[in-house]
Length: 158
Image (cartoon, rainbow, N blue to C red; front, side, top):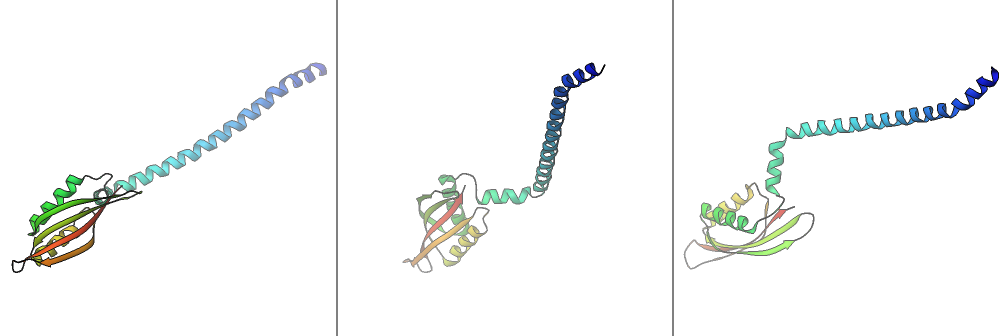
């Protein structure tokens, strides 16, 4: 009997060790799963909170969009100038400075009254898109109260 008991113990011992190893691995995987579940739960919570700020995030996206379109920019500047009383004369694309955020620069020439120019600058400032006027020069024209304005304008995209 003792012989069979010892033989059974010797034969079952490796299986018992395998069982302990598998049980240990199971506990480790269970802990990893709990950790990942907590992590994804936090992500879901943050996602739900971001939904509360969807309108603000869309404004930021429109201020600095993922891509840029030169014709869209030109159209916006011409339209805004016309709405504020400026007469667009020339609009040229200067280039793009590459980086994580691209800087698009344009030269914009227009003519009109000083108050129209102020309205144009105010419209750019109030725009959903982020514009930065980097350089302004102006000179009087032969018409009384009318000026010729030259602006270097930058805008950004990702």
